Image (tube, rainbow, N blue to C red; front, side):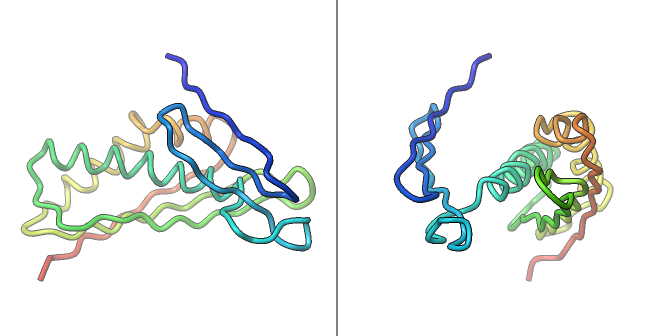
Length: 142
């Protein structure tokens, strides 16, 4: 399976990324690196991609197990190595799932299955040596 994308320089440190599916995102750097701070940083894109990939899996698994989810988000906290390059060394992911009569074990299973079996981004980053941790919190919808 081939995935395509294109990243085009605009000016300074601003780039437009276009996905193969036709969606565009602005990437930029901070002023002290020649940017104007008008878009997300490239490394932030990787972190957001990880959160999106894992959330996609978690929601899919919870829907298949007939959990009544009303809200879901993942909070990501990443540490990077000093110097250049400065890859991610550790990422913590905390899923917060809200719904009615959610089963704690089902939520735990969804998070674990995403991390260990389904999330390509998680698996790729772990293979590269990034330490990933996952946790979850279940909240009852009001």
